[in-house]
Image (tube, rainbow, N blue to C red):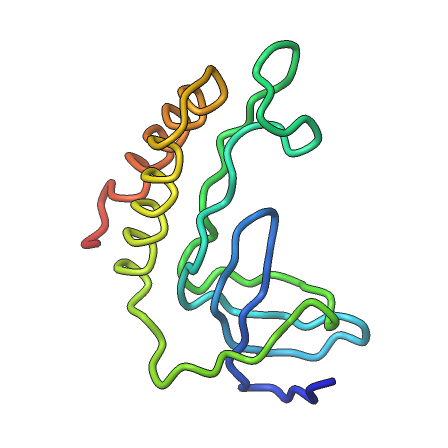
Length: 131
């Protein structure tokens, strides 16, 4: 088990996405983590009914914003061991592109709807921002 301290850089999953962040507070069984980059974009659709579109609420999930703060359980945090933290905007673009390519390689109603949902959230990322 790795011992973490305030200021450590970590990777953490959060609501089907994976993020790079900095521990800014120890809260007993959780850490408060400030988001610095996106490693994996959150999955679109209903997580309780994966890859289904009929009779489910199809969620559009945005990635967490730069510097957004989240509470995460200590046991799901892992050390970030790369030399540099990617630029938030570039990491977001890369995560969106990777997820889009995964969806485009598949056929079916779920993949079509998930791709449409991703395009919708992607448009909101770039309004008034320089990335």
